[in-house]
Image (cartoon, rainbow, N blue to C red):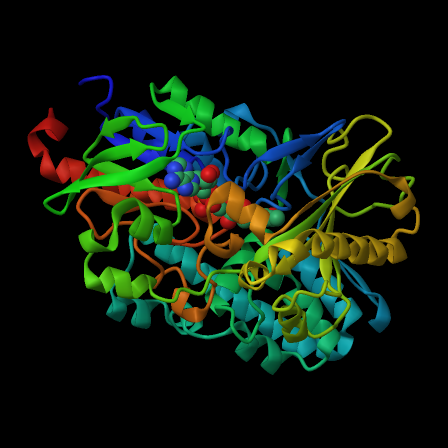
Length: 512
Ligand SMILES: Cc1cc2nc3c(=O)[nH]c(=O)nc-3n(C[C@H](O)[C@H](O)[C@H](O)COP(=O)(O)OP(=O)(O)OC[C@H]3O[C@@H](n4cnc5c(N)ncnc54)[C@H](O)[C@@H]3O)c2cc1C
């Protein structure tokens, strides 16, 4: 094979692309990864503001479990050659939920019994509803696991008859269960708190996704990565190179080349050209369709699928380097949800406007990783979800002032909970959905691909197999959805489907 010829080219080194590349290269394929940014990871990355290294995205990693009881992600990372290169750190509590104006301050442990006990103690009047709700969520999870064990999607008939709870949940919003079982707004808030991990309020969020996500954390716990999410991305890169794969950083794909309805290769922004009959796009499908391939080469049904997509929310992050130890600042919890409003629907409405929201997330990384920042310092990141489409309409001249307003408002609110925090700020850096767009190319700076509505649940999401022969998708916009664990499984799913298709087209070679 010539130097510019590959079995597979992966466009984008987000976790979905890295997982696909690791799987394919370890299966013996000659793989090239093209990444536009100067480091691997997509959102799973870090940046430096002396003396701090900041985590761009990861708060809580699902699916790792413990050495004694590994979760579903751990063996996947192990098989890809990534697990042995990183150390996972357990996060003691799943989250702390605070609503200062409503008198709520509750810690939710990362276990089924622990979480239910904490909720029952805080809301004894909701005992029956909480008990039924938990039972329902875990029934859905049991069916999700059973479907996973089948390997592949069941037929509609099998799904409806053997997996009735998940079939129902797939097309149902979380609110149907949450608001039916719980009447106390604070109980709804405490249980629905991680809506922001999915980016839609209960009235619009797929119940199946929420049930799968929350029960996964309550079964396998939440983890952080020593060395930050960059260490995980670097571990994938090392595993790819170890298996003979190539990574090209700082050079994006500018065109996916096609002939007679098949992909033939990629040309890059620096003017290089590589050939491959298989291409995995970790770059979002909207850019892939309209910029990299061109609508004239795509079937109308696929273009209709992408017409008027609803992206998930983006984020405004205020990264704080603090010149004080976390204990001095009273930062006792890794993940703190600060609720200005007790109404989750209202919290979502605030993501649709440009004014800084009253609800946000404070992550204090030194709790899970004491070595996260230099001795005697700590890092906190304040994260507000925000719809990137609103930011796109902003006049460029208004952008710096708005960023500043967000930072001031969020720091002021964090200071009410942690009074010594504002005066300890040594470094402050702000990102917005526009920053997300710039660094990852995701439309509207979306962090979970398409919005997680019931019609974008894992079964209905964009398939891994693309509309042109040899084109595949991996990442948040495709099945099963956004988040670290899902996009890694998306990359592995794409790679397995590719290997299966290759075996089917070359039975003699596969048997040899
Ligand atoms: C602030 C924040 C907090 C988050 N917290 C969590 C969390 O706690 N837990 C969790 O599970 N998830 C979290 N997420 C979500 C998670 O980070 C994402 O869903 C996931 O990382 C997306 O991965 P991806 O594979 O879709 O690729 P992306 O991360 O979107 O990366 C795509 C890559 O493709 C590259 N690319 C695009 N176009 C081209 C091109 N033409 N040529 C070459 N390269 C190209 C981009 O440069 C980028 O590197 C968070 C996200 C953010 C922003």
